Image (tube, rainbow, N blue to C red; front, side):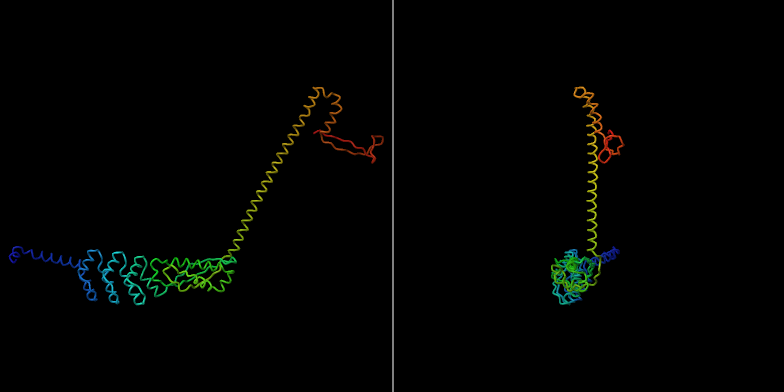
Amino acid sequence: MRDLFELAPWLLPILFILGAILLVGIASFVPVRLWIEAWAAGVSVGLTTLVGMRLRKVSPAAVIRPLINATKAGLTLGTDGLEAHYLAGGNVDRVVKALISADKAGIDLTFQRAAAIDLAGRDVLEAVQVSVNPKVIQTPKVAAMAKDGIQLIALARVTVRANIHRLVGGAGEETILARVGEGIVSTIGSSASHKAVLENPDNISKTVLAKGLDSGTAFEILSIDIADVDVGKNIGAELQTDQAEADKRIAQAKAEERRAMAVALEQEMKARTQEMRAKVVEAEAQVPLAMADAFRQGHMGVMDYASRGPRRGARSGRCRWLARRSQPGGRARRPDGTRRWRTCTPS
């Protein structure tokens, strides 16, 4: 070996560099520092376990450090369960913190339930905190109308506590707000007057709370407090006004329809009058033709026409009777001293 180094003096530095690179590679692949931390905290984890995590593409720090916290808090957890939760896409650190908080608060929460809550997409740590310290949810402004037509705008605050056993599959805050709003609308709508609601707003809280709105949700409603009640519009009066306006428009439309029908009927009667006049003119035009035909056939002579024609023509015109005082020596007078005669104007 000494002869080898004498023949190749550059071989020793190369071997030293290769050894350093190998040590750095082993140190980076095998988390020796993390193993020392676990050993110092009293957590029994072998180097082979850490190397296996590396091979399974599991971050050893994401599993070992929460395990150290759980061990220090007095919880008994295994690396297999934590590693499986990590591979399933869960947050190991948040689950362990939730278990520690639940254990200190005396809440019965197992690792399997906490992992299921976390994998369901809920914040298990926040759920434990809300279970210990109830949360206040403020509803948006809820508008409702009493029976007298007055609108009321209510604002409520709902105090809820998380129900750990119903977090998986239970409804969230949106359902609580929707049910509370529905209860407020129903309670105000069943009130005879808006004044009764303003006098006792706590009736809304009692009525809504008695309906059991938290069934099927991940929360337990502790109280419902009405923070503010404002008087809105007179919806009843507006509805009556709109109805009256609609009735007026309907009446105007019907009146316009009747007027149009009357105008059409008038025009029709005018047309019929013109038609009848045309028939009369046509009939009058037939009279000379009939007389001419009578002359041709010999049914009427000149003397007949001379004695009857003017009289018939006078009868066919417009005639009026005139009454005048008769002059002495004139025609025969009526008993009242007047005489009458008729003047005709041919049409």
